Amino acid sequence: MSYLPSTINLIDEYTNLQIDRDIALSATPDEDRASVGMVFDNKIQQVINQLMQKADNIYYVKRKIESQCGAIDGEIEVLQNEIQRLKKRKQSMENAWKRIEERAIMLIETVGEENSSGNKVLRTNAANYTVVNRDGKLDLIDASKVPEDCVKVEISYDNAELRKRVIAAGGKTEYGIVPKTKSLLIK
Image (cartoon, helix red, strand yellow):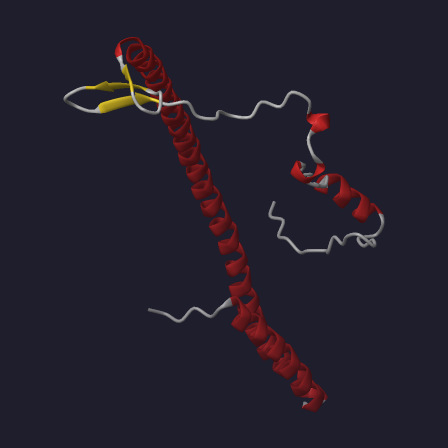
């Protein structure tokens, strides 16, 4: 297996060759400068060729990753559809249970016996069924009359609009900053 230098190593090598070339040319007599320069230029060109190959590989890696991300997005969509189907199935089962529970309550209230707590009870070989009264879900009639200590207020921000304003103000305001970042554009 051949040794493949990293991009960082190639950049270091390129920089060092440029420096070595400048030092060598400054210490070389005029008549030998062309040959010394050519030696360094050939080495520098080899490093540039390797860097160009690395750059081409970046393009292919990017395309491969985009392809894989697209496949993953497809899988996510399929799984989200399956999740929705299962949620609907679960809701259908919960609705079926509610209907069964309503009919069971009607049955117990009709044929059950009253216990010491005043609840209707039906005893069978499988189980004892009791209809009990419980407090249900709160329905607000007038939200303006809710006690202050029971009110929760959540603050949210329009980040997209704030970002635009901060950028328009030069990237920094008293309430936010949008730092400059570097990204790679491949055409």
